[in-house]
Image 1 (tube, rainbow, N blue to C red):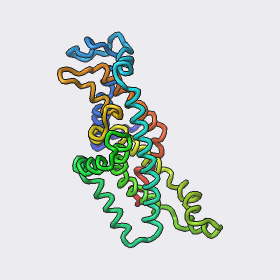
Image 2: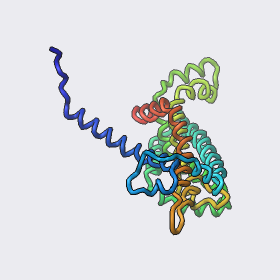
Image 3: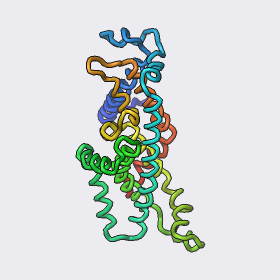
Image 4: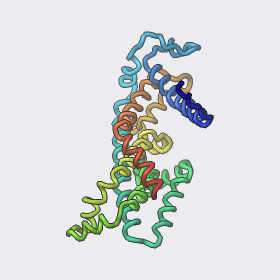
Length: 277
């Protein structure tokens, strides 16, 4: 007779936790997607039903009854520009703090991390005052600058861990072969730390894409981003659940697709440099 495998209580608990977390994560998203294809009478039934006549009218309304296309474009500009700036400044800052053997490098890195731990709402007033003073409130540059300020500390801290893991002999060998320090950085170091850069890209992009608080305070009607635009579907008396669900589904789709494409690098980036560094 074949020996039966003993089921360990720890394994059962682990799977229960994973299933509960999966349900907690997936069910709300699934409800939003399903509601985006329902007419109002089906949305407001007491018990949610999976059998209904689907419609795409909510998606049509999202584009015809609101400036969803403009919101989408604004979010793309803000998220991409802030992410590119975070990667450029963060990569060079991390490289400078790790490669030039500064005495205060660890203190500066810890300061970056402490800055990330400050509640976001505590930074709203000072950033609002600064951006308003330089005349960028109501422009796409305002929320982009705010998102750079919020994402940069974690980017520097994460990339420092990756750069520290790269053997110095690689950079030294490149310089012996005739490369300058910057050429060694571009040709040798950067390809090695690409998983970390990819992790910073997706995390920064995702945060900027979904951020509401700063975007709400720093934009006006013509520069609304997607989260602010979706929030506008909430009226004083009622909520357009169908249109808002369709808009939310269209907003989630790019980040989900992007996450699937870079999930390998994201896993390496969040578990590699962050743990080893």
